[in-house]
Image 1 (cartoon, rainbow, N blue to C red):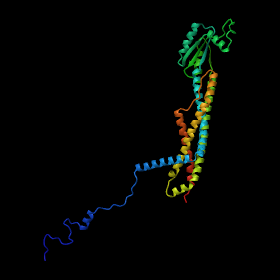
Image 2: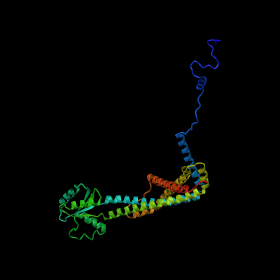
Image 3: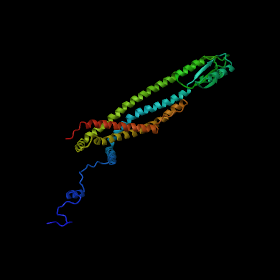
Image 4: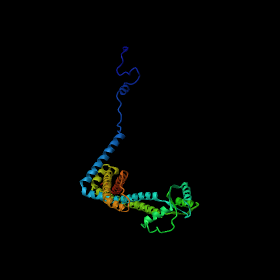
Amino acid sequence: MKRPTGIKPKGAAPRSGRPRAATQESQRPQKQGARSQQPRRSSRLRAWGRHHRAMAIDSLHRLIRYPLGNLLTMLAIAIALVLPAALWLTLDSARLLDAELDDSATLTVYLDTGVASGEAKRIEQAVSADTDVQSTRFVSAEQGMADFQQSLGVEDALSGLEDNPLPSSIVVRPGSVDPDLMQALAERLESLAGVDEVRVDLAWVERLRHLAALGTRVALALGVLFGLGVLLVVGNTIRLSVESRRREIEVVMLIGATHAFVRRPFLYSGAWYGVGGGVLALGLLTLGNHWLSMPVAALAASYGASFSLPQLDVTGSTMLLSCSTLLGWLGAWLAVSRHLASIRPR
């Protein structure tokens, strides 16, 4: 019996030649396997920043909770910072004085006693023509005698002399106060005709510079020693804080906290100690400056000079605060890293 044309038998394949199961399967949405969703970099950075901010605020609150003990720690840090900073300010004042002495460093060219005034002017022009000479000042024999009498306070005692024993001189201000250059300049000027002697007196300038160099090394050595003292103070304080929170650290390490996560609040505590010590050091330096300014000004006025103690400017204050904060952070890092290595969660 023939089947009617145009009627497909039940279960017959479609005209395309593909199986019905394959067609239905291709029409269904394909299932994808589970994929791990990695957090974006921006999300991790925001979480990292939020944790830093929370730890900074929490560590500050912990310091405020015990003000007296933490204030004593900051005061110890401030005292350790004040001593090298005060010595450095003293060296700054010595450098200012050294600059003033450089301006007053001169050579004195003594002429022969028989040199006439016209010849003396010619010699002064020859001295001024030297490239290492900045300026000159001619002092006649009469003016030299008057200055000499005035400095000794015996204006009439030497008036009875028949002849003036002092020669004319030329005060030379060199372009450089380097001892070798000044010595070479003195030898050139002494070779001029009509010049009897060239006097160079830089021994006191050299002594002051040697003292300034010694003071700089002493200040650096004290800065290093007191910096180590700050590290020890902060490290001991943070060590006690780590021991008091040992159980808490073991718990957070059991649930997978890294050493960086555990170390972070203690680092901020050390930084706050450094900031507080730096602020107290600035206050102590300001009080000491006001306390000593009047006696120092009175002492300088008694010698006919004006002098004021140098103060830390904005740059110096910023450097002091930065160094104190860095020392506090470094001391905390050393203390926490050493103790975290010995903590084993149980």
